[in-house]
Length: 562
Image (cartoon, rainbow, N blue to C red; front, side):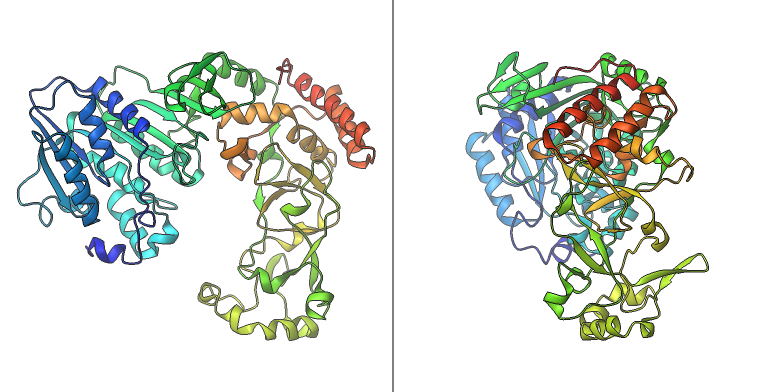
């Protein structure tokens, strides 16, 4: 295996190594939860696989009744961190045995003691960790493949995932691990294999999703996992709690969001913000690979009621697609081709971006245009014959050096002037629903101008039955409702900062639709069309409120008070 120094040779500081030092209150919380589950022993071996400044270990030691017969084992690839944490620990707890190792914990997981340790390390009674976050793009393809092979990871690999799997190599049979990770692993499609592995390797006591509480300086949305090695017959279910900012009125008070997550309902914290705490058990659809969410009796009953009235999902009506990705936007996309280039290439087409996003109908913001280099021939997508379009060819030739510099295009046997992800040219001519990826409220609108959709938005056409022309209007009606916000929060519970949600394929394809032939659905379709054509703002707002009420009625559910 290559050395850790080589692996991170491009890293210039601790943050670029993926290190985000742990806030003290969160460290205390994780420590207390580990100790609650630890069996009483004469001696304890506690390990931190990425010890950093030693804050997690110090919090753990401070939470113990006694630090006699405690051995601390720590790993870090940064020698300064090793020296700092050693100094801090000995300053407060000189009686503790310390074995800090300047090396990569993942090397230890793969190779054991061979290169890192002078003697064989014992199994760990407890692991407390905030492993580094380093994405595939930073690691590089070679190292990502190495981690995938050695730790059974799939998809977009993040190094914290390898740390989680690696803990199964060194945690004792009755040991307990408390780990701070990014909460993205709970809900993203690419971490499905990781969720399956965690389910197979461990019995998970608790999951705490700290959501948008901003516990870290960096834009990390943390979650905490508390687990032990897998038993044949676990005698408990996984408790799951989440905390996200809300505008609802508080019913309780806590000093910090970390303190608040052990309460229920809406809690106000000393930072002046209100948070909604949800509590229940871990749940997923049919497999541990599926999205992990909080299951409580009220939420599950509500979802069951929705499914009873669901005729189809959005994904069954039409595939959810992401927009085009040129990988050279400065060449292919312009607001005004004549003003910016002095040319009007034959191949330019109107382009939808998030800048025109508005509910039901796109805004009047300036339209962008894309030079689109693909067509359908005999039912197959192919690059256009550039010689047939002399103005487009002349323009593209001016940028040939940059476009040929996209090595991945050439290596894929594509033409040098191609858009990297063009989607199907045939579908651009159809009416489509377009929506933003990240926004506070659902923002879906209809495009009937044969526009191309950019990669900062998603879109769908009616793949179900082309003659059912009103299906997209029903999709639009449901998609822009408070009902869908409520469904999203119960089903997926994935918010970013400032109450923003992610409307991505794996979520939107599961959105429910009522029977399009029902009386209420027919009313919804008519009202959606009316809103689309309405120019009076007050009239439109009133119509949207009426439509929202109809959506709740279509699923035979009462509308909550927002």
